Length: 489
Image (cartoon, rainbow, N blue to C red; front, side):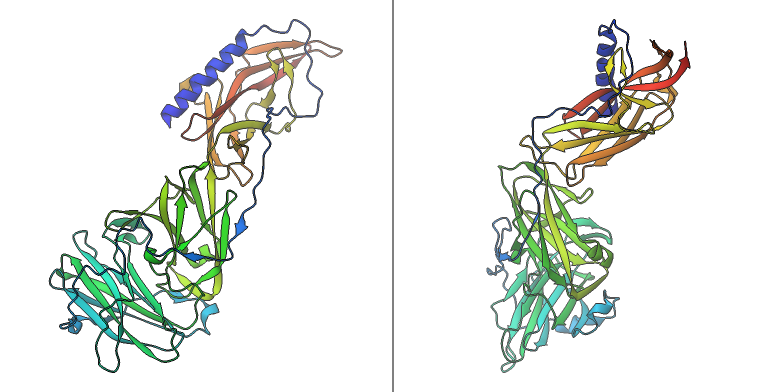
């Protein structure tokens, strides 16, 4: 930031020096009487692209960037000697259903256990599911970077008491610790299935120690059955993500719910090489935010390690490739509440323009002093800089970070009055507005204005620079920093 301020100060100083060297108008100058603010000229027509609503999702199972398939079992699970005796039911405080969900039938339980050797497996069975019910299971822990446990889901034969060795779902993320609000942890493993048959069915869940084991580090296995859920379930892991294709103006989805404390909804997004954006704004509606819902973006590394990508003002920086959006809850939930998920490209800025100013004197105070017609701001007043950020092809750039700097080089650095800075994000129309509190003016320039009533005005030349943060895209302007006037001076 210090380097940025210094660079802007140098640029504005050069701009002001150039203004001082300009040949002053020899004729008498009077204040402009026009009530129109001067705006930066542009031959680019702004186009507002409205976001569209996604009506239908398509499954994107086995995406290329998730390296292993849930349908290929590389581990030899031992179905003959399950260590079920070490699993115990835990009384763990769970997430709460909202009052809206009181009519829904659901049950949840959490178990814990350990695995004593690498390659070992713990089973939990039978879990009964009535026709139309949804089964979800989540594996948390062990919380060690040296251990990697996976989660599998099987059908259980109630007649023979055997487990069908062909898994119907699996979650095989690699261990990778991300920083969450609740603390550092690897992404939990999640599986799910819906009983589409007209009769009761039973299932078995397996926790498999793919890498390492520990008698001291437990895992926690939560099982939830629900009868009320949205039509796209189950999609508990990135292996079963739905394609989310968004338009230039953004796209939203409002047909899904979070119906349990371990419900995970997953979406896959593809960022092409040919695009006019470098970041994506990922946002939920305010009601869902209040519930504690989260929308997170992940990238996949080798071995299915899922990396949580940082967000700033809901913006996530993305390169070309495939990414995954996870929606879940950290507090309460309701199958009757449909959340709205919106993905909107943060279009790549190609140009920034100062479009106007405001202060207690209003937006139209443009006197025509010796250095040209420029906006005039009073000393010790609020001064607002307005502008717009656009792509090179004319689209307004929403959610773009903007830095604004004001400079009066008549003040020394040590005075604390030389610069004022502010930041903002552009709105959906690419517009930004930053208000700065200006210091006193030194009144270094005295300009005599003759007329029926004569005055001498005292002011400084100051400069304004607006820049798209982290880029070389910048616009500058001169502003008169007014001090005072003397009648007949």
